[in-house]
Image 1: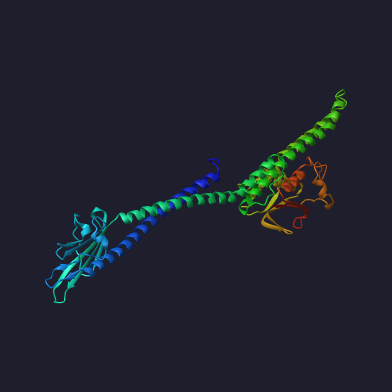
Image 2 (image 1 turned 120 degrees about the vertical axis):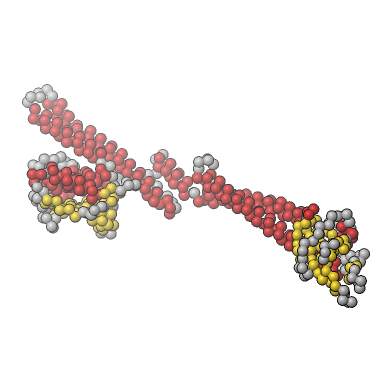
Length: 447
């Protein structure tokens, strides 16, 4: 697994989170177990205190008497770890268990009768202090503090064993969770690996496009990549076709020029005609090859701004006609296309309208248009008040080299380029008679 891979980064991130969680869980569980063990010890010491209380006897003289045989055998064994003490109200030691011989006695805290205190005393011992007021049958009353202590080693050993067990289980659980996380991670990024393999297959020629059943989040990516792949293939295909057409188209003029080379003066006009024809062919092929015909995956172009720039330029070109531009264009109409393609489409259509109109050209842009069952982002409509084009000739002028009127100067490639570009862009081009102006009306639906 490479360091820069997403799998490695996600696995390391998950491992760090698990390590932090288990560390905190270990601290919390250990502290909870320690408190539980201390509470159990407190209850145990409480029982020992009650056993001392049951064994003690307050004599008529007011002295406290303890029997030689105590209820708990550990009190009678020196160094057993369980020790008992009785202090007077003035904290004077009244009695100590045989097990506490030789131990330093820590005075109890201030306590009122009936109250107890559970403390971790010096020398690593837990102590339970319990204050009582004792009154015998003759009415003598005394106040004592019963203290039972036990070495903290018992609690410490329990906590240590719990800590070791907890660490072993948490480590085992952590390793299991990491393996589960790794399996889930591989399952989660499987769609990415699938799309990478499909891209490699496309690169090696085994596939033409991304056609796998990808995750929902990757549908947009797959669609954009397919659009990019199709666009690049369309470019390459157009370049190949343009070069092939150029080579084929130049054959005839070159043959004619070769035949005229021996008597140039006699065939001067023929030579000029063929040179002009070759210039037309080269210009057309270059213009068609330069057209991109693609959707842009990022960034939007303002079609309204492009139309305004084109109308301003055409107004200067056809200044002698004093053309009136009727613009029904929104302030902004953003569309995800190449700016050069939009200039090519709108420029050719508006230039033809200006060329054929008498005095008026109408340009309108409609957002979110619908044609049949399809929804389109933008509808561009260009109309003029010229003579128009006969319905039977509409299909012909979309072919390269065909002009509506051979007497009008032009190469007959503008409408062919527009038709090709609109088709490559997934749009729709329609031509018919303008009901408003009487001339020609071109409608371009941009997907």
